[in-house]
Image (cartoon, rainbow, N blue to C red; front, side, top):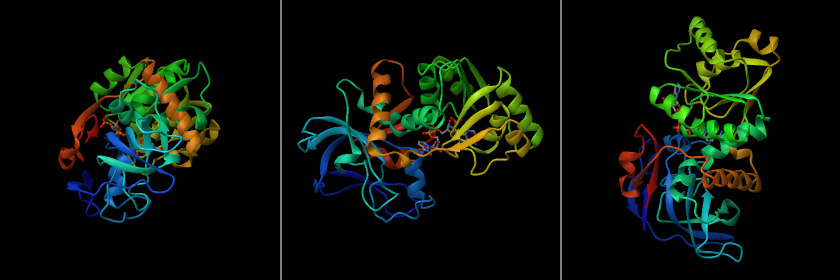
Length: 323
Ligand SMILES: NC(=O)c1ccc[n+]([C@@H]2O[C@H](COP(=O)([O-])OP(=O)(O)OC[C@H]3O[C@@H](n4cnc5c(N)ncnc54)[C@H](OP(=O)(O)O)[C@@H]3O)[C@@H](O)[C@H]2O)c1
């Protein structure tokens, strides 16, 4: 079968022939229909992640969608499924191959009718957006939510999921006008440009003013950190919350103590890795239900698995590999 293989950390995967995987005890074999390339895949394969340098060669792909080819009593052949893997975080192979062997607890049955490529594009990015809003962020109906990085998949999902969860106001912040326009179409009330910020305190203050121009916010969903996060905390109302779930802009942020303590703010971290398999399955079920209800989508591009090397670091919409 065809598989994308990382042969050395820091190099893009190449297409190779690999033997078919065997089911193993407590596992299923999934015929893969769609495997997204997500920031975590790039980070793990770079060798610079906090999981350490991956054992090579390995097949990347921390998630995928497919159909059970060899099942169990609980997950019979032909069942459409989403699955997670630890590829790049622990030794073992991931989703970017024609067939994947996965432990049953990492497999979630999908309802009929969900587009596998769209579900793959959203996957753990949408799970993180949903859990950052609710499980960690404690969103309640009527609250005002600011979504940073609204052009990315976490951001697109957060805008839509905040809206459908009853947020009173959704403010989207993104670098490009294209991303801001898309955020408005996805339900944001206001879209704020992020593009002129430096870490100069005057620029941080100016960005904070733009973010808060619509009124102080209750909750920030932050996949960026860096200057955007530092500005966003200044747009929070007293006792407001910022949930950080990524560092697409920077690993550190120039947060100022006066803002944090004078408003008794809460800056919280979130990772999908803390979820139990049942929690993750429940969150994914919500994501898929929103897709089926027509309330959740994400811009994505379908690309043949054979083109993985060229697609690996291509900028633009989320790439979903199709074997
Ligand atoms: N904690 C978790 O469990 C979890 C789960 C999923 C994802 N994440 C993390 O969340 C982050 C976003 O994930 P994603 O799936 O949304 O990725 P994505 O689709 O690749 O989006 C990345 C976003 O970051 C923005 N960005 C990159 N550099 C920036 C900068 N210097 N200033 C401002 N914006 C910048 C991009 O803006 P442009 O569109 O303008 O390029 C884009 O909107 C990643 O760091 C990812 O690892 C965490």
